[in-house]
Structures are given as structure tokens and as C-alpha cells.
Amino acid sequence: MLQAQKRPTTIYMEANPNPNSLKFVVNFMLVDDGISFDYPDAASAGNSPLALELFNFAAVDRVFIASNFVTVTKKEDVDWIEIQDIVRNQIKTYLESGQAPVKAEFDQDPLFDENDSEVVKKIKGILDEYIRPAVEQDGGAIVFHSFQDGIVKVLLQGSCSGCPSSTVTLKAGIENLLTRMLPEVKEVQAQGV
Image (tube, rainbow, N blue to C red; front, side):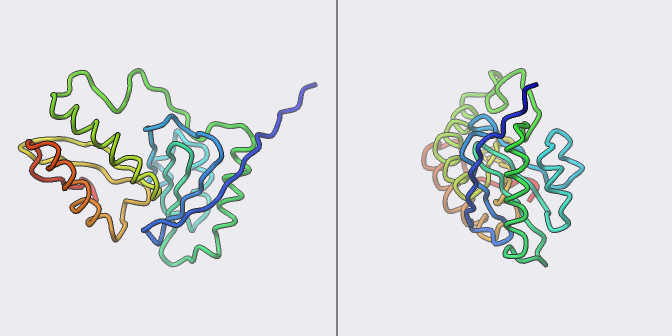
């Protein structure tokens, strides 16, 4: 009888600008590059057995999964030093079992839509090429929401959600870049923050 092989898993932790979030970086891809899954609570995590397991810890407030990392946001009344090893070990044990962290399939690329206007295609391209990698470094994601009357609306996910420096990033970084590269863009706003 064959026994299931443990998947060798290495995880290191990275701090980010949000003091309530910690990024757990894994030595392999968890989901396709450019795709992310944000779970603000256990009720939203139905397609992620890993997120559901993490929400079993009372200290966990939010779970975000992208490329090769999991960002966990803790409740404010808990210190990371108390739970970081427990959370890391839970992620490691889960991933070593060989289970998928997220169970989702897409019929089409969720980032790009052939019906998008030329301006929206350019906005999404800039977000994907220039901004997504930088935001992912901090354990978060930025997702295009809409474009109307010169205003780009985006969703901030992972460590970016509720981060004290997200407004500065949004205005000084993202808005600056988009308005400089695309004259059609006048402003960038965070949606649902």
C-alpha cells in the first residue's frame, strides 16, 4: 500500500506596514500568479480549507492567499509573539499534507475581460505590471473595481485592508502613477475600506 508523501515545506515570516498582519512566505506557489483570495471572515472562506483552519484560532481576523504566501491579520488585542509560531506551524502542517489551499476554478482569466474598454485594459495592465508586485511584497493585493468619469476604484486586500499607510500608498503611489501614465485617470479611490 502506498503512503502519502509529505510535501517539503519551508515557511518564513515577513513583517509589513500593517502591524496587525504577518506574511507567511512558502517555498512553492499556492495559487496562480496574479490571482488572490481575500477572506475577511470564516463565512467567506468556503472555498479555502486552509483559511477555514486558520479561522479556528480566535486571534485570526482575516486570511489572504496569493502566489506563494499567506497573509494573516490578527485581532488587535493579541501580540504576534504569542501566536506567530502556532499560525506558521498550522500553515506548514496543512501544506505538507498536499492539500490545495484554495479550491477554485476559473472559466476565464479573472483579471482581464475582453469587453473592457481600452482605458480599462491599460489601467488593469498598469496595476498588474507595476503595482501588484510591490503591493504583494507587503502581503497584500490591489484589485481593479471600476473606472468611471476619470475615477479608478480599487479594492485593497490582505495586509492592505485596514493598514495605516494604505491611504499614502493609494494617493502618493498608485494615483500618481496612473494619472501620469494615463491622462484619462484623474483620481484613484479605495472601494469598501
